[in-house]
Each structure stands twice: as structure tokens, then as C-alpha cells.
Image (tube, rainbow, N blue to C red):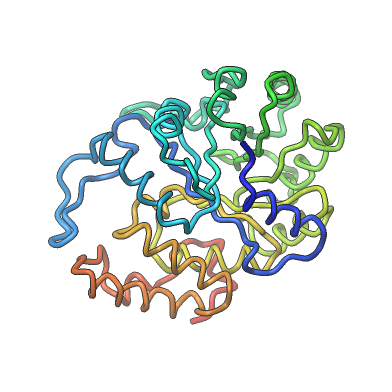
Length: 335
């Protein structure tokens, strides 16, 4: 079930023949694995901007189908139940978009209203079995978090090994997500990005090619840290960037631009796409930013112009939406 476009792009990246048109964009539409009902996002009237409750599941499902039909993304990441339904409904039939599903949900993504799970270190957990999922999909996501805690990190790595064995038996490919801890950890003065990079390389050093993740999904810890991991072994380790919080539209384009310049070859944004006024239009401008047709600030203005022409009310005024609000991006952002 491998998608030829995704495979072609990965082959070009690993062979050292990368061009910006090879950049891989994934839409992370799996929020219910962590957040439940509210994860689909607020129900927002596009003309007035007024929100009322949360998007119902059928609307969220339609948004996934719409993005897939646009052909602007290369990978659509979903919860297993959603992926099974849409694959069997034929949404991906004849499409160049690769369907993928989340194959674990460690406790640090659990975020039910009123919950406190994120105050604690993650415990490994997974619901779906790769053997069952392989009936409709051949690509999945597995996530881990390192805490500089010997016993906890050993449990995490042993769980990842067991997962890879199950994937190997099922004929399932995977990509690996490595989160930053949700709280500060003792690193004896070392930078968090350096610790995460070293932990990734150590984790994958013993993984043979038939069980190796096809790419990474990691947090952006600055351009220096991104360049360090992206340039370490690019023929084997293809680095992708996760989106984090929704932020402003400028944050979305700025993160994409900085990570790309530092060597990231994949973006896997969830809230940054889901929370946009017009997700399909936003992804279209993401392509233009990666291919240097627009710089991040220009892309924000162009996006707002597109919203106005479509009769969609922006959530923020242009000046506010053009601001960089995420600290990790401010040092390299151009005014």
C-alpha cells in the first residue's frame, strides 16, 4: 500500500538529491487519541468568526476528506478508527496521499478536560494492534519521550522494541515521534535539544534497516539543534518537525521556514492546520514558503487576502497574526 509520491520523495531525500518540491507535508488529524471530544476544534462560523461548542465528528471526518482531495499533503495521519473508516469508504482510493494512523498513545498526550496526565512522565500504552491495522493501512506513528531517568527510559525503549517486533510481523512501516518532556528535567547544564538529539541517535543506533522509522517527528529546539540532528546521517535519518501549539499564522510559516532551512524535510502539523480559518488554503501557502515563493511574513499577508476574498473572517487582525509569539522562533525571525 506504499504511496509512490511519499516513497519517491523519501528516496530523493536519502540519495542527497533533495529539492524543495520533495518536502513532505503531513496533516496530523489524530487529536481524539489524546483529547477526546474537544480535540476536533471549536465550531466556528466562517463569516462571523463566532464559535459555539466543538466540531462534531462527521464535520471533522469531512475536513480530512477535503484535505485529502486537495492533494496538497503527502501523508494524512489519523486515529485508527478514523483511518479504518475512511480507507474503507474509499477516500484514499486513487489518491497520492498516504494514509497513516497513530499506533500508540502514551499518557503524555492524554488531555481530557480536567485531566492532569501531562503533569506526569509518560507511561507506554497502545490500543491498536499493527496486525489488525495492516488490513487497511501500512504506515503508522509511534511516539516516545525521554526524561533522563534510567528506569523510565528503559521501559520506554523496551516498549518501542516490542512495538517494532509487532510491526515487523505485520509488515507495517512506522515513523517515530520524539516529544520534549512537558516539564523541566535535570540535564546538568546541557541544552535540551542536545539531549534529545543524543537520545535519538542512541535509540536508533541498534535498530536495523527493516525496523527503522522512515522519518522522525520531533520538536523544534532551535536551528542549531535541528541542523545537528538533520545533518548527522541524512541518508538514514530523515528529520521532520512537529507543530506544537496553534500559535499565530506567522508562527506556522516561521516554524516551517526555520526548520526547513536547518535541514528538516518533513512537517507534521496538527493544531497549526486544524485551528486555521481555512486549513486547505493555509497548507497551500505552506508549500509556497518551503519553495521560497513567499517569506513567512509575506505568506501571512497573502493568506489574509485569500481569506477576505473567500468571505472568511480572520481570527486576528493582520498585524497581530504577523507577530512571532513562540520564543524558540524569535531569534531567527526577520521583522
